[in-house]
Image (cartoon, rainbow, N blue to C red; front, top):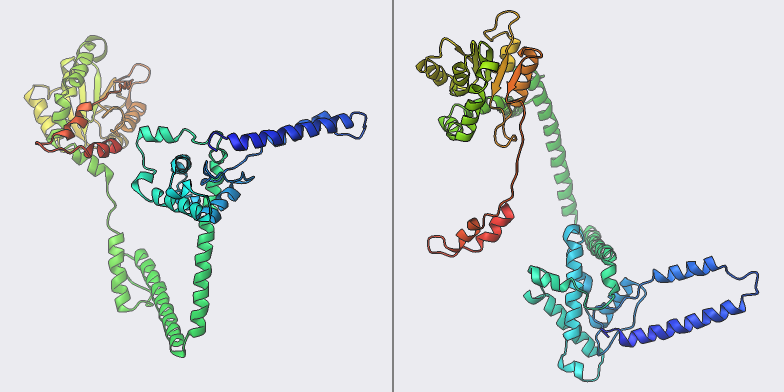
Amino acid sequence: FYSQKPTHHLLKNQEEEAMSSRKNNDSSNKDDSWSSSDDEDDDDEDEGEDRFTFYSICSNPAHPAPPFDTLSSAIEHDVTTYGFDFLSHLPSSSEEEGFFEAAIILVNKCRQFVKDWNGDEANAKWDDDVSKKLGTDLNDYLNTNKGSLDLGDEDRTKYFKPVLEDDSVLMCVDELHDLKRESLGDSFRAVDEAAQIGIDQSKEANSDGEHALVEELKAKVSLLEAQLARARTCISSLANDEEGSSSGSCSDDEEKITRTVTKISNKSKPDNDTYYFSSYSNTSIHETMLRDTVRTAGYESAILSNSDTLFRNKIVLDIGCGTGVLSMFCAKAGAKKVIAVDNSDILVQAKENVKLNGFDDVIICVRGKIETLIQTNGLPLEKGETVDVLVSEWMGYALFFETMLPSVMVARDAIMTPRTGTMYPNIAKVFLEGTNDKERLAYWDNVHGLNMAPMKDRMISEL
C-alpha cells in the first residue's frame, strides 16, 4: 500500500481505459462539426489535474482502504471503520502559527505507526475487530509521550518527509485547518444546544419560589445600577468643583466615596522630566561615563586638537554638562565663554569642579532645561549674542537610550550662530557585530558544583 502498487496499477488501468475511450471518441468525432474543440479538451485535462485522491490515515498495507475524492470523507472513514478521530488529535485551529507544522508531523507519525503496526490480530483474517484494534492502538500511541508532537530538531526533520508518497493529505493542510475549526464549531453548537435544553427544562421546572427569587435579584440589580449612575454624577460634579460642592443628588456615603475617588484621580501624574533629571543626580552614572576612557578621551582629543580653528575666543554651550568635564576641555582649548547647563543636582559639584581647576572665570554654570532657559532668556548671553559651538553628549547607549537630542536641536535652531556655528558631535554611526557567547551557556553545567543545564533553554528563550 505504501509503495502505492495495488492502487497505482488499478488507477493506471483506469486511466488507460479512459485514454482509450477518449481516443475512440475523438476519432468518431473528427468529422462532426459539433464536436468539442481542442481547447475544450485541454480544459478537461486541466480540471483532471487538479483532483486529489485521499487515503484514510488508518489505511494499512495489509488492508488498504479505498481512495476517497474528499479529505473529509477519508477522515470520516477512519472514524466509522477504525474508531479513530484524526481531527481530535490536531492542535487548536486558533493556533495558526504552529498548526500547519504540527499537522504535517501528526500525519506522518500516524502513517508511520500504521505502516509498522503488526498486532496479533493483523496476521489473522482482517475483520472489523482488527480495524477497531488498530484505531485503539493508534489513539493510545498519540496519547503517550511517544506520540507527542513536541520533538527535537532531528525528529522533526524525520517527520517532515512524507511516509506515503504523494500524500494528498499533506497537500491540503489548509483544508485540515478548516475541518478542525468546523469540528470545534460543531462542538460549541452541541454544548449550546444542550445548555439551551437544560435552560428550557429548568424553566418548566421552576417553582413559584424560584420565580420570586429571580424577580428579587432583578430588583437589586436595578437598584445598584441607579446607585452607580448617581455615583458617576457625583464624581463628575466633584471633578469640576475644586471645593467639592455637589448638586445635592448624592447621599453622604456616596459623596464620601466620590471624594476619595476624586482625590486619587487628581494625584499628579508621573513627571518624566523629574525622574530623568533626578537619575543624573546619582554619582554612579557619571562615574560610568568618565571611566569610559574611549568616550572621554575621544571628546578631549576632538576639542583640544581643534582649539585654534574652532574654540579659541569662541562662545560654547555645553548642554547636559554633568560634572563639567566637557566644559573644562573647552576652556582649556581657549574658549572665551562656556555656558554649562544641567537640570540635575550634580550641577553643585560641577561648579566646585570648575572652581577647583581654575576655570570659574570662563565657565558659567546654569541650572534648568535648555528649552525653558531659551524661552525665558535665562542664558548669560548679551543681546544679539549667539553660540559658536554647541557641545553635548547626547548619544546615550548606542544612540537609542537618551532623550537629549530634541533639546540639542532646539538650542541649535534658536541660538547657534547661523552658517558658521557647529555642533560637537554632529554625526554618529552605529556599528554592530554578531557574537556567540558560549561561555554563558556552559556556566549552567557547573554552578557551585551543581548541574543546572535546564536553565540553558530558558536563557536562550529570553535572549
